Image (cartoon, rainbow, N blue to C red):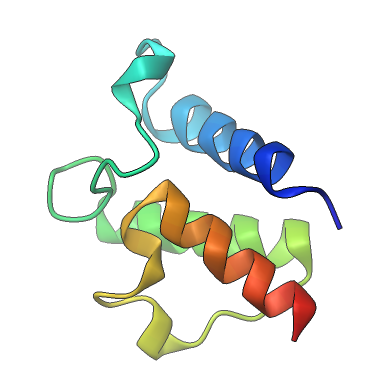
Length: 86
């Protein structure tokens, strides 16, 4: 398992490259809301979930998607760490 800072960087890089191409890296802070502010559409959220599940060999449940930890980079990192240590 990667360490938390490395994991955060991997996830931030993926979101920036996939959903905010060409935007400066400071566009995406660790607590920037991803859902509801137009960064991630519902299709983008599904792409993100697929990426997380495939990359980190985890399973994300439906209740973790809506209003859950996928709202911010910090939340995503926490979810991945929790799933990997469970």
